[in-house]
Structures are given as structure tokens and as C-alpha cells.
Image (cartoon, rainbow, N blue to C red; front, side, top):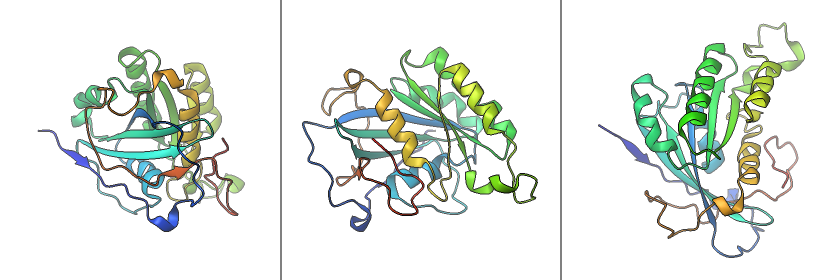
Length: 239
């Protein structure tokens, strides 16, 4: 039994930059999959990116959820087609149908649980072995809000995965690397910006090209990732 949650992703009008640049030509589509252990915050990351919201104690994803987000850059407009997969082991066998033909993958771990990085590494190996040879993979350590970097010895710091260790692994494996907080939005947009920049335009495709097997409600306003960060913003993208 396969459950797919076709989530609505309309950003409230007051959360969209009114100065979004005019789109030149059709938007390029990018199929992106999120992978990782259960409860590392995959759904929270994508909901922060798409809907600009964070929900405490979110219910686990069953099967997969599908969302889209259109982003405007200086030289292109990209429509991300995002598959947010379930992290429970019983759904592992379904993963290939989601990462097949994906141009990008975000592999998420929880920086407060070292075992989730081990699982993330196994996902990376699987992607490098079975996914597209040119897939762009980002390793993302989530829940940065739980770590007080200024007081490393404090009981308030729950970090179990040193940033330097994860960065070294990502460099060795040829991955993009970020630490994020879905709760505070820190670095969330930066992940998607880096992915969009790394994927060659020629490997993207346009609507109606026959490669899009699943429909979904589009965010017609989208987000402008050219905009400058507002005061206090920690997830701004510089393009």
C-alpha cells in the first residue's frame, strides 16, 4: 500500500516579495528528493522552505509527500518538485521510485543524534550507486537551534555530531554541506539555492517535456531568492 500526500503549498500573499522579477521563458523543473532517518526534520525543512512555516510535533510522513516551489534567480526560474519521503525502515524499499531520475537529493541527519549521520551516509552510498550519475547531493545537519555554540560545555548544547566531522565527510564524498534549523529557518533557503546553482541548466527540463510523472498544486507566487536578507534573517540566499 502506497500513500502519497499531495500537499498544498500556497505561500500567503503577505509572505511573498512583491518585487519578484519577471520570468524569462518557462521555468525549469528540478526533481528533488529528501531522504533520512525518521524524525530528523525532513518535513519541517521542506515546509519551512515551501510554506514558510514550522509546526511543533509534526506527524511522521507516511509513504511520501509531494510539494512544489517556484524560485526566481538572476538567470533562471526553477520549479522544485519535491518528494519528502518517510524515514521509517519499512518504507525504505519505496525510496528508489522517488530518487529515480532526480536531479538533486537532500540527505538529512539530526546533529543531536550521531546514529542519524550513519544512516545518512548509507543513503548517500545508495544514491551514488543507484541514482543518476550526475545527481547533486546535499548533506544537511538539522536542528541547529538545539545547539548553543557559545557554551559548548553547557547542558543546553545537545550536539552529538561535530560540524567538522560532517564537513570532512561531505568534502570527501563530494557533497554540498549545510547545518540548518527548520525551527528558526537558519540556512534553509541556502540549501536550495546551492542546489539550484550546482545543477547545469541543460540537465533541467521544462513543463510538458514528458518527464514529470506527478502533478501537484503550484505555488504561483513562489519565492525570490535574489532578495537581500532582511534584518535578523538567518536563512537568506545570496545569488
